[in-house]
Structures are given as C-alpha cells and as structure tokens.
Length: 254
Length: 247
Image (tube, rainbow over all chains, first blue to last red; front, side, top):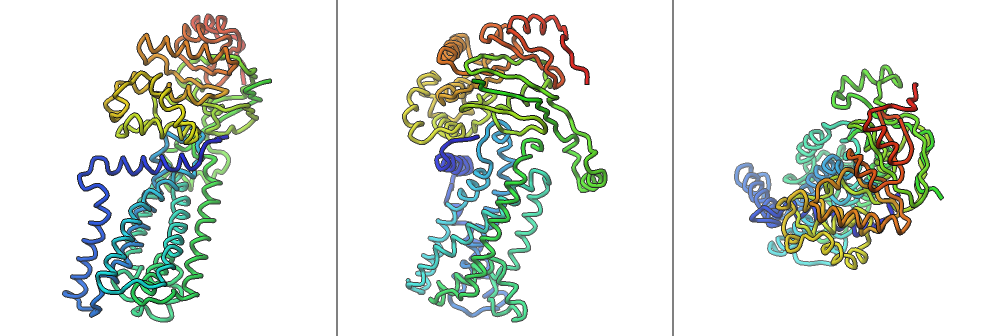
C-alpha cells in the first residue's frame, strides 16, 4: 500500500522526536549527560559512605555500567510504548508502515545512548581502566540491547492501543527492574542457585557483560552472551509478530 | 480501467471503546461475538474509472471519512473487497500531519516522507513546494506561528507535489483565501486534464458541482445516491432520499 522511502521516513520521524523534545529546553541534549552523572554520584555516595557495601575504588564506573543500559532501556521502552497512541493522528490518516513509529521512537532515544556510552567510556578511562581489545565486543552488546528494547516497544505499543494502562505497567516494571538489575550491587551477591535465571534478564546480562569487558578487560562469558543474544532476538520476534497481528485493527481502536 | 472499486464493502467499529476496563473485557469475552458494533458503512458498491472526479456528500457522521480512509488504505473493511489502482495521496485534514513546534521546512520534510516521497524527490521538489505554498520567509518559522490558512496552503502544496494517481481531498478548500483557492482549483483542473482520479469530500455542494462530474451521497453509512454531480447536489440540497436501501 505505502511505497515510500523507509529510511527517509525513519530519519524524519527520529528528527521530529528529537527536535520536539529538546527545542524548548535550555540544556538540550546535555540532559542525557546530567542525569546519569547525578545518579552515579548519589549511588556512589550512598553505597560507599552511608552503607559501605563496597570498597572498590572504581565504584562510580561499576555503577555507570549499570545505569547507562538501564536508563536507555527504561526510557526507550516507555517512549516506544506511547509511540502509537501519540501518533494516532498519523495512523488515522496515512497508510505509513505502523512499525516505523515505535522503531523511530526507540532509535531517537539511541541518540542519548551514544552520548551516555561516550560518557561511560570517558569515565572508565578517567578511572584508569585503559583501552583494551575486548572493547570490540561493545557494539555487539549494545546492539543486543537495541534489539531487545525494540521488541519490547513493538509489543507494548501495540498492546497500548487496546489497553491504555500499558504505560503504567511499563513504569512499574521499570521501577522493579532498577532493583533486579545489578546496578549498585555486585553480581556476586546473588545466590548461585538464582544466578542462572537472573542472567536471562537481558538488561542484567548486558550489565554483567559490560563489567567483564570494561572493568576486567576480558571477553564476556559465552553462556552469558548467548543468553543475551537469544532472549533479545526472541523478544524482537515476539514483539514483531504481535505487532503485525494487532496493527490491522489499530484504526478501529484509536 | 477502474481506479477504485468497492464491492459490497461493510465497515464496522467496536462501540464503547472508552469503557474498556478490565470489567469490560471480561463481559465482552463472556458474550463473544455478540458485542455491539457501530456500522459506519453498509454494503457499499461502486466503481470509479480512472480519470473521473467524484464528490462525496453527506451530513456529519454519514461515513464520508471512513470511505476515504478505506480508499487511502489506513483501515480494512469487515466485509467486501476494495481494489485501488495507483498511488493515493490523502490530503491531510488541515495539515494534521504537522507538528506545531517544528518549522515549515522540517514539517515539509516530515510530511513528504510520510506521504511516501524519497529523499531525492523531496530535494528536487522542495523549491516548487515552497513556491506554490506562497508562505515565503515564514517557511523557517515554527508552524504554530502560522495562520490556519497558511498551514493548509503548505499541506496542500506538499500533497499536490506527490504526483499521485488518486488525490483525496477532505474538506480543505474552505480554508485558504480567495487567491489560493483559485490556485488550488486551477491545480485540480490541471490534475483532471492529466487524467488523474480525484475523490473530493465537501459539505459545499457548490464546490462539488464545480469540480466533479459525479457524486456519491452517503447517509447513515448507506449509499443513498450515485449520479451526476448536478443531480446529486440538487437532491442532497432538497433533502430528498431516493433509492433508500432498507435493510
């Protein structure tokens, strides 16, 4: 039906998201640096001074390895979930491929991810971890997160049309996820019998893999990596197929 | 060849969507298949040959917009089949595809992409679109500073440059000033000369008579009359209901 230029459309949808979000802010994109820095400082202060849980001198980098993937995931997922409802006026008037809307929303947030990853790497260097060859794993790791969150966004944005409380569900899940992902505590504190299941959460797996690569300078564990990979692609497949099925009736319910 | 063919098309919408709380879902599930649906179009059949200009008239809620949405391919019918040959350009109602915080240029790009332009084509047509809209230096200002007429002019200018085979115009010509309206009508005539199909929705029977050869009259989701624009306009204004199909 729609025979347009997919990438041209995607680019302008991303630009729209980006421009409308930041045009009227004085700090603009700097917010994506300020937010993780504040969170990192707070968590470092609390867990080294108030609860001296950790004596690691690189603790800020440990925390940042958790915060950056978590921030991106929760933001991109929440925004992606709203994408269809927010753009209802487009769905009702134009035969644009529906999946471009949540995908553009996720990719729009990936711009912040790039900024935050840069921050993470700069901080890692500042704390003296040094660059190593294992950094070559990083694009693959972030790629998996992108795949995973795209799947989540497709799934939830489609469900959001029918069940409008979806965004609150997403918010609540993110709140819980903050504690389920090893952001401020080390993975070694998880009891071994739960560790296997724990790694099935791609965000947790990503955080663990990032710490292996950045802090320990070794390749991520193969089992961990395959879990991250399979769960992410499974989610994309699930999200895509549910989206395809539900998108046929979007018009009727918007 | 026929550009648009509707064969016994019925389109219904679920009712009471707003009350879809968990309770509602349970209730609906219990009486599956028996929940109420609103019939927007009932058993509509017509053919529009390529190159014909067809007006659609009817009061609010008659099913005009649903009909256009079906042609544009944004929704699918419950029953019947729809065949559309060629590229369709829906003219967004009052430029609804526009975002008020974006500038004219940014909206132009976004809208062009949404309508299916390629990057190269947008770049090639850019100057012509801006020129036709007559917006001038305002093109770099956010659209929220535009008057409704200016917004419409930009929207119309973009849609007309898509070079569609079928152009859908939904209640938009009333907005621009006299000069721009004349320009649009001129452009639509040019369109007709090129042998393109036009679907035109309006409350104004005068505009329908002026632009269209044929008209469809919809009432409560039924095709009440299908005939020459003059006949339909006369009947519609007289309020007469001819050929009423009783279910």
